[in-house]
Length: 429
Ligand SMILES: Cc1ncc(COP(=O)(O)O)c(C=O)c1O
Image 1: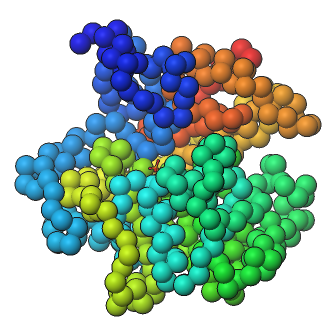
Image 2: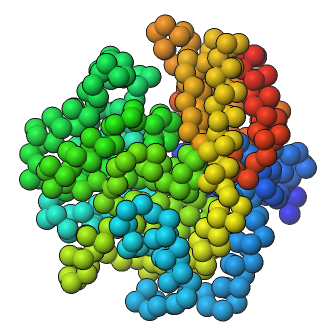
């Protein structure tokens, strides 16, 4: 099939997500390897966002491909109630890298259903209903996950699932309280405490937070925030769920972004970097404490494709790649190079209002005016995206934020090549 035929059939039958389908002119992609992919005309693109921030080990890693092939030849599917080698090894491999006593693994198919199931487990464990979440959050597109999210993607499909309550973000650059860290004394955490009190602690099952926020802001909470939220949860018998779907598996320079803090959550949800998109898989890591109670009860959770053997085999191989190639440490080291380079760019480009980064997870907050912090106009963001693509760099631009999150296997030279393209493109707007 030639590229034009592929596109025609795609336009006729394929429904794409998060887009105006009529307006979409999809890039026809032929192949990918490492940090690059190529379109059907042979043009090479440097993947500076790991697709949807999930291809942490890069495209087409031979060890993961081999593990998938081996599992397919042996056993493609077996019912979730049975035990099999890939399933046992995957759960053990995750338990070995999660913090604290998060040693119990429930597998899902992706991030949204990991969050759905974490919420159900929180309700089953606490006997309470409400879930508190941040305004700037995205926890997935299924009905329960989008209901706790507070992102422009939610209002279009409301009414959602009842019981979600939102609170203001710990987002220092655009502080909702108009304060500055550290003289703010973590007003954002006090606000969580007040929200809990006003909503009545005996109605709240859990607080769900991205350990570092992705699409709706690309920021880390200020030091001390997660620890304070942990205390508030403990004081009120509320569970803390950390959504690490985007920032888990080395993205921020630790296995899980919560490990930059002293807080240990009751559950961590994960997907993306768990199998890096080679095959779909998500998971909820649950504390021993919770499962010690729930183990004796009938568990009202389940999926036909729970702990799918092929996905589990891919997860074992993927975690092995992170370990063998030292990718978590590499993310931390190259993250410093990335942050230093984008900080220098601020001197040159007034359009950069703020730079934020942790490991190979960074963003430019682009503004019309540094004083007012007014977001850069949507047309200019579109123009920027087109310029980057034309120069062979693919990345995510969300709202006024230019995101940088290349595969963790990127070399320092390739990182600078990508940053050179961004530097030049910023000079054109
Ligand atoms: C923080 C976070 N949670 C949940 C999700 C949803 O994951 P999925 O698209 O695999 O359902 C995403 C997806 O981008 C995410 O970034």
